[in-house]
Image (cartoon, rainbow, N blue to C red):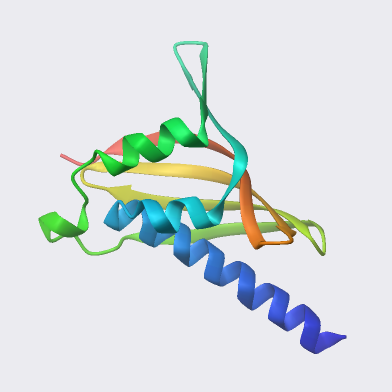
Length: 129
């Protein structure tokens, strides 16, 4: 049983790394692999809730200049993993894209396609000047 749990944790860590690389390289293939096709993304700005479907987010990321293409090193870290069950978890991460540093809460589930993000809530933590 422990080997199965270890594999599950390792696979989750790989999925998180895929997310980091998708954002850093603006890699739509990786982004679409790690996000469930029905996932949504949320943010609040001036008390207005912003909701975006993964299709829209994917197009947005695909149109960006990647941090990697500007010579920026991948700057991302896992802050917390909160296990709801053996197949559901919330992962809190910090990731830098250009001058923006974001904190994301990623809802992961382990389904037929492995660990995938089903929801993302993000916040612009700071802008590096």
